[in-house]
Length: 183
Image (cartoon, rainbow, N blue to C red; front, side, top):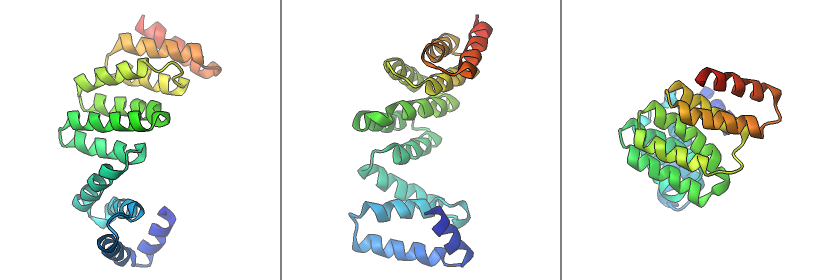
């Protein structure tokens, strides 16, 4: 779709396309694909539709709980200072789409940490620790996030997990260096 949007933008027709999508949304309000495309087009910075993007994203979040929708929605809620509602959205994805859970939680740990949402970070760390088969790259990412923020005990946990689970000599060495630094 991004290639199509680029073509339409270059041709000067992206605004007309967006207007046509809005009309289609009125005619067919249950079509989630139209809603997805509206949100995508409104998210293009040069369109200057930030408020409309937020509206479409909020509407989409009501009907779609996948990571590609709820992660940006949670980011938006966090930017507005609503960490509790943002965390609820993360939990929706984790419970409704368990296969998306590890990546959603790893990415969420980063944004909640950046936004100083300490209570939610503790809950996310707990959920991540409960995942037995956490991918080593996710474990390393969690370790990095926590290390940067001074959560050294939890960072060490994730570096040890990465070290134990990875076949990558590179990840093993990174984990060892970070564990030595923490010690």
